[in-house]
Amino acid sequence: MKKIIANELREKYLEFFASKNHKIIPSSSIIPENDPTVLFTTAGMHPLVPYLLGEAHPAGKRLCDYQKCIRTSDIDEVGDNSHLTFFEMLGNWSLGDYFKEDAIKYSYEFLTSEKYLGIDIDRLYFTVFKGDEDFPKDTESYNIWKSLGVEDDHLFYLPRENNFWILGSGIGPCGPDTEMFYDTGKPKCSDDCNPACDCGKYLEIWNDVFMEYYKDENGNLSKLKQQNVDTGMGLERTITVLNGYESVYDSTLFKGVKEKLEELANMKYEDNKKSFRIIMDHIRTSTFILGDDHGITPSNIGAGYVLRRLIRRSIRHLRKLNIESFVLNDLANIYIEEYKSVYEELIRNKEFIFTEMEKEYNKFVKTIKDGERLFYRVIKHLDKDTISGSDAFKLFDTFGFPIEMTEELAKENNLKVDIEGFNQCFKEHQEKSRTIDAGSFKGGLADTSIESTKYHTLAHLLLATLQEIYGKDIIQKGCNITHERIRFDFNLDHKLSDEEKVKIENRVNEMIKTNTPVIWKEMSYEDAKKSGAHGTFDSKYKDLVKVYTIGNLSKEICGGPHVENTGVLGHFKIVKEESSGAGVRRIKGILE
Ligand code: SER
Image 1 (cartoon, rainbow, N blue to C red):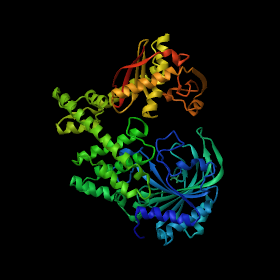
Image 2 (image 1 turned 90 degrees about the vertical axis):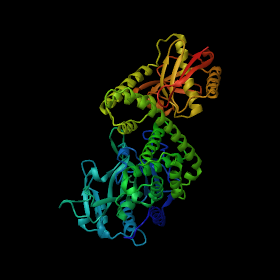
Image 3 (image 1 turned 135 degrees about the vertical axis):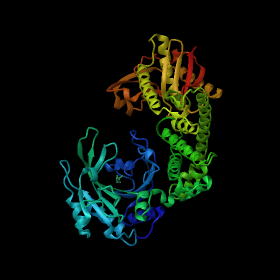
Image 4 (image 1 turned 180 degrees about the vertical axis):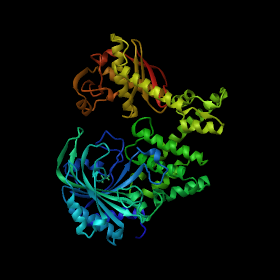
């Protein structure tokens, strides 16, 4: 088989399916539009779920696409030969149009035809669903492969764990699949060696899912309105397999960044694979997250937190390669150039990518510097060769200093770190903050006198104001109320300037002056979420909840009590603003 690079594979795939009357649709966002249960688009079919369920797609019933995906569950595995946090999925789709026969014929033609991949049929193996108590054996697919000339010894029936596809959440459209494998030519590991074996002889390159079922959150199965085909070919993986690469990082997609790193570090990739791979992977993923039109920025929650972790981990590994200067944008730019013809948004958002990379770098460098200073203060008073778990935890919790950095510095100073003790502190802290949550669930109210009730309503206006100013990512991290003040914690990455404080005060006071009635309604938690209500401590709420609405200013799931009208609150003033842990700010405010 001839060598093929990623861009060619993407192009050929789309060209082939376009020739079979499929409309090419561009990748959807990396942030799912309709699924609040996950942070990122994790599969090619993710954005197409409504259409698989029967909604009409504007481009028709035959589609083909390439989709940006992110999976971070295996982030700690990145550095080995195969794991990536970002990947592209190629797919062709029949939304109630063709089914098994055409899907399999198309797959066969694309894989074997000289015009496309031209893979020798002897190198290909196929698996089909064996059947179980819920779904019948897929003899139809088996026979279609056979009709194309595939021999029995290249065809395997396998059980549900191998040949059935559903999203990671276990909910949604699903169905049996047929999978295609490439024989690497390695010897069989045993007489029973087959495509289900993970010895590395057979590697999967494509998956045709026959989606005609739906699984709901209670595990109930039903038939979908229509029979769909959802196929998925992982771009990086397929390139690696077909070219016989040792790892996904041998693809030309990574060549530019790999060479730049070798130049900057004056070290060879071959001698530092793990750090190189982590940097190559994480910077690519970060570039795509920042380059998406959603404007996600590094933060301490949700997608922003993943982004922060990716960037900071890259910086740590750059430091391991002795690269301490700011090079993130040089690396990001190489990816932008590599991908810009396919993902135009990277050009549109280039300045945003660069600005945010730099901001995060500066923040992290400051964290590292402060942490290092504190680290040396801690070890000055050490009377043994081990840094205690509680000291390591303090560096982490109060100053955001990563435990790995404490370990690194300790090593440089011939010291050890009590990691078990650190983990223990971490666990205790988590348990403690859960208690805090339960307290806050009650509203953080020390008493329900009219004065403290006013502060409780103020908390809603304050959260609404902060979300207006800093975005919907802002959440209430804690709230403590007495009859004379509020202490309100929320996630924000910087200290408030005087102007910002005034802006917040003014907006809250404006809201107060609208004299808006505060009303509440009881509803199911589901309906509350659907209505757009914020629930700060989501997982604590069950069944029926109260939703407090203040005109169009605020809507929150909350136990109450509240004042009847914002007008009674008086005048709000911030008396103090300070840090309350890494990435968390605390406002102390009064009503006058
Ligand atoms: N949904 C299947 C997968 O992701 C096929 O696209 O593998």
